[in-house]
Length: 182
Image (cartoon, rainbow, N blue to C red; front, side):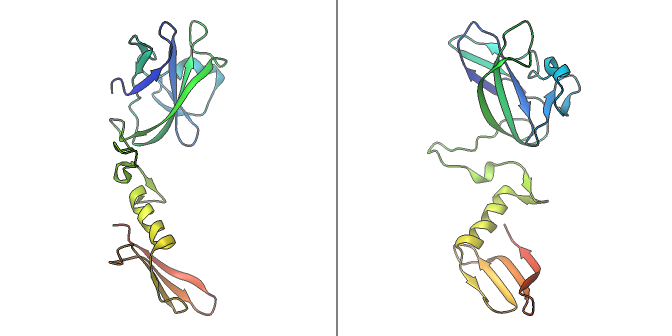
């Protein structure tokens, strides 16, 4: 990994970044890995290789840690003293989508989200892309079988069932669900 993190702040000052997981754990460069926050370890939470490098022109770069694919939060700080400290002031924040070896661009040149580029899964093995397809079918797709023991929600092209549910008519409860996000 090299120079995946970019911060635009005044040159001549020392900045560093901290990476947090979606469950709030912070990256510890010594372990290396994520851990629960400890004030005593604050100097170990700087991004790898000693923080951000001032490239001039108010541009600072740093390395993202070698961690698994997913979504992460990066907080950038202005270092007030000789090393990172709990009281350092936050200067910027960003969300990073990481595929395990590189940042993933999730916005195309027209400002639209590139859904297929989102890394990770939701609810077990469902990819984010498949989840969005299923949600779109439930919210905006045609449905068949309402009031019967078998209900289906179709994709927007009306070419396949995204959600198929078997209903217990006595209780109204769904007893079997089949999802197709492909």
